[in-house]
Image 1 (cartoon, rainbow, N blue to C red):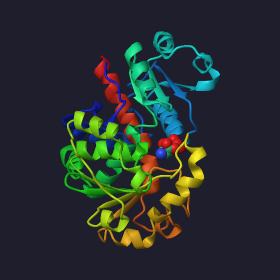
Image 2: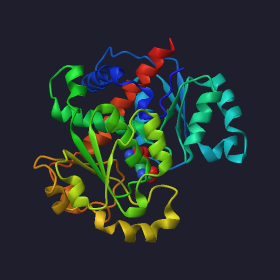
Image 3: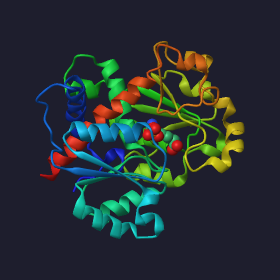
Image 4: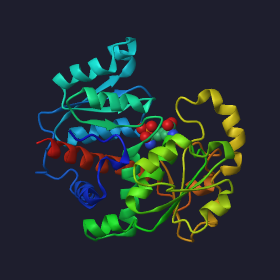
Length: 317
Ligand code: CP
Ligand code: NVA
């Protein structure tokens, strides 16, 4: 059973096809006669955290592939009252064709996948956000390899450098480190001293086949030198609200300003998974810069997730 819990759940060799499929789905969106690989299927979305992009792009995408999305707030089902993750997985597997899960502890998506008998997609945990990384990589590939084959589309990422600035111990930073290594990109992190990736993450990365696969800087200007992409995320991720004051203080030097973007390559792109806090992690002049591609990123969630769903369903058959 194929699941998508982390970036490396697809092999590098599978990615040119996946990227080409995302581009095809984007091009043909809304046309008559598009394939409906989820016809007759229901996919449950179990969410324990807020969401705009992920929830809407999955609900719309499942509908467009011929399936039915069933949104379940974690607090409204018995799992929120103590029913085990394993029993929830076993029961839902009798009703639905797949689970899309947003939660806190990453082990929960692994346990759902292990106990159930349908594919599970990670829609963000405290550890990783792989749907975002794949969509973002597709957004970059579209920019860098317009009008070429799937191999060239995916291959256009190779050797490029992305610098992630800010909360370098959050799900987006970890996911970009893993994703960049898988895509053949170089990745630098720029954040406060206490926010370097943990030894547990380093062990996970080594186990994935990418030992020491990133550079960590406390100086953001040094980190963005030579970067093709400057990426940031909120400084207070969902679940970290109690640390807000301390985080805003320690991360203040890591705001993406016009000056910081100018220290990267002259044509460097700015990315943010959104939601953004203008004036905190990113300044208005950067959001307004034509090299900001934040809304293309948001749109591509739809196309890439439709490609992922299509591949997971095809591999079940
Ligand atoms: N980027 C992202 O996952 O957004 P949502 O939290 O709105 O889903
Ligand atoms: N790091 C953020 C990402 C939101 C899409 C969070 O976990 O809240």
